Amino acid sequence: MDFVIVIFLIGFIGSFLSGMLGIGGSIIKYPMLLFIPPLFGLAAFSAHEVAGISAVQVFFATISGVWAYQKGGYLNKKLIIYMGISILLGSFLGGFGSKLMSENGINLIYGILALLAAVMMFIPKKGIDDIPLNKVNFNKWLAAGLALIVGIGAGIVGAAGAFLLVPIMLVVLKIPTRMTIASSLAITFISSIGSTAGKIATGQVDYFPALIMIIASLIAAPIGANIGKKMNTKILQVMLAVLILMTAVKIWIDIFTI
View 1 (cartoon, rainbow, N blue to C red):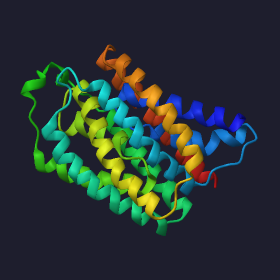
View 2: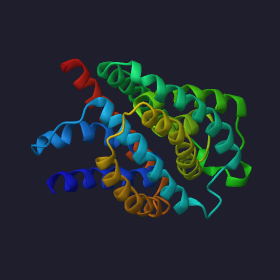
View 3: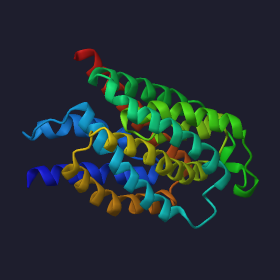
């Protein structure tokens, strides 16, 4: 029972923040799944198991998050199509290829991605939320190319890449914050199809803890999305920046202490 409660709470917290901030939740749940169960005397998951559980859970967390954002014109269909197709291809390649990598290699790639995302989130984003949602423009091929690169790296760690997609949309493509959050959840859902398929095909998913986290995500993600729609966009940006930075620091500390 302790195992079920701990895994459920990890899934609930991660999915709540996922819905609020437009991420799949793996940037939160990956280190939580690695480090928290042993603190309660439970068996530790390997990096491969954590990546597999995260990939499956993200699939369900993003579905429920997108559902909560479907009204209000926040979903940019053109952005979702261009980046979604590219990240799907990349995430499948990364998810399938991760079987060939060591646990230290998986953690190293995760740390590099988290560090890049943290740096980008602290770059000033002036005026993007003044753009009307129906007037948003972006470079389609740049968006597609960046999504392909993110997909390959994110597929390897089972993270679906939203924690890197969000700063790319805000800083490089100049997409307004709420549209970024909603559209990134939809793109992350598409990405998670590839990474989940790759993990399942190579036998990297522990189904019981994955099921517990799926249940938690279906409850928590819509709650987070509805709260996020009402919050000040600057607060959302700061929360995401701090969260990504803390995760990057923790992962790098772990890499250097192994």
